[in-house]
Length: 451
Image 1 (cartoon, rainbow, N blue to C red):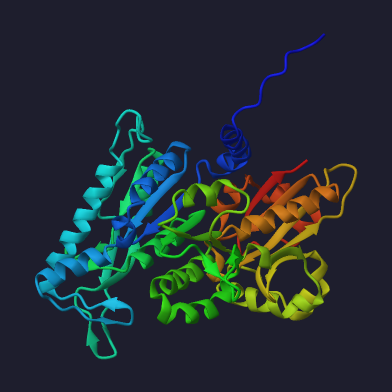
Image 2: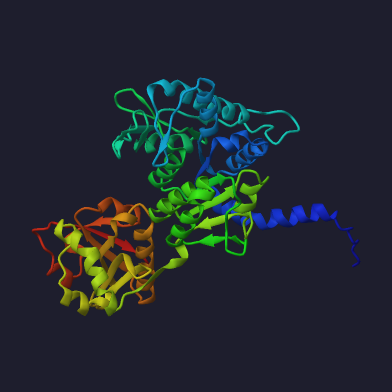
């Protein structure tokens, strides 16, 4: 049977179809993920900002949970210059006097209204038609004084004290965009001037965001040959920070905060240009991207432990043992049981560990094992490394034909419940483990079928 041959589409249309097809995996991956997007007042002034708003609306329509954090430095400078008010900088922070506060609040408020207005556009034949975006801003950020540094009183300059994460999550769950400016509020009712870059970073850390995106005045980082560095480890940023400190302080500030976010649980930090039309879409929905991604994901390894890891395990476990969270294990015991342990190691440092202890099996009971000694370094506890190592050992258990896992815990019952474990009784433990149960610790028992 002969079929008609369909004429090829126009080349531009073909390119669009090709891009759209290949973006589908990224659309699925990013849906319901939390992104913090930060841009300064320079971006708001740029002619490309309306296109950025259109792209933000598109990300929102694809089910991405968005927190927008904006700066207002040039707008504040303009307001201060108009009133001939001087506010010097020290340690990268503006010294905010009470006289200058009205200029700051005016600039911050004006930008908020401008962004809300742009996100409310709905003209026919425009990218915003039918978008119906709800934008929420409010007193989510509690601040405290930056204080006196080097003998200088920073007055109404502040830093973040806490974030109302519960309220923000509720708004994100309701499909709202959350909008935050460079201000925070104290428990005494004062307004503090904050660094927008630090607000974005701490918000990303506290929300355990999947991505933190900085829109700056440069399209990523360049190597010594002028080529774009598409990916870099946070541990290699110090040289870049020093390099840009004088030539491009905005990028240096972004990099300082990118390093902090990456080391505290934000898996991906992106550096893009606000002047490049479509930078957000090209970075998020193509394989190679268009900017620089900061991540330490490729510098970590989940593996079974070896004898060289004993010192790292001791350093990780001792503080938890001293708090009574974990049972004390001597160096000799760790050495003898090292083959039961799995670790997450990065650049020679043990970030997390857990152990798998199979129980002697018989024909009357299903094959079981205990997962014990789950520990994560304090700096990385807001990341997913505990889940990673638990999944790793569950996979190992299945390979060994183990069908049921037990855990005993005194402090982390809810965490194990969240990972599929169910309450059990001491009597359900295999006889060998019941004989070793410490009634003085009174640990809760949980079990999970993995067959």
